[in-house]
Image (cartoon, rainbow, N blue to C red; front, side, top):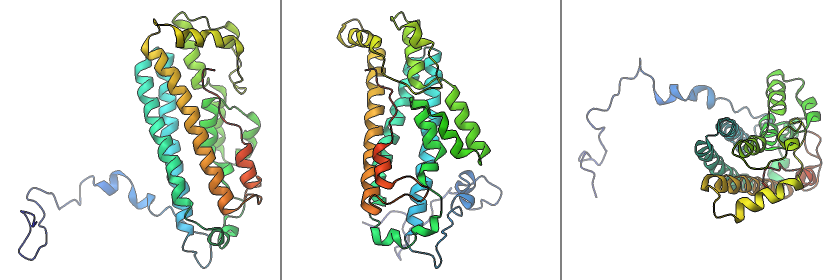
Length: 278
């Protein structure tokens, strides 16, 4: 079917009213700073290997998603601090969608064969995903605090400052428990006042609290839904890590990673955040 605004030669005409003189306007490219964004890929292989661009774009886009995840988790924590549970749930719903997107994206990198990766891997030198400070920040805000990890980022002041800030602030789960305490749930004082700079560990005293939340017919829906969202975050995080593990094993096996970690084995051994209420 020929479009109504198509010329006799089949070329679609620009609709009347579409602005074409954009010399002094805020354009799509300027708004998104595309000149800088699309020129930020700098393959190091020489001669440049065809597949290195895939590797770079995969990790750059992951970092952009991590930035948004941190943005939403911080907002969710702030909403919980102010007892605004519903807006917090909206933030967590967005994070869960991002997590699913991140997990699915491993299928793109999985198209890289071990032989192809080996042909430019040495060009990465000492750079490694182990050094992703935004990934560490996500771990920290979800409960997997690790002060010793700051040493990796001492040469990057901005990253070190960000991680120190997240390390010293309450986790998302801390904010949730404190909100429950303010609403009258019997959260133990030692849990509410715990040292938030250390990793979250299971607290047996919380088991009866959450048993009551799940079994009581009087539990407000937003409280139950928040519990489920925290469990979903953990499940999604584990799924992402598993896909990461499998892709790493597929491309480098158990070889030592470029930044020093032990390849697929390190991915498998890395502890996960512990936000679920169990």
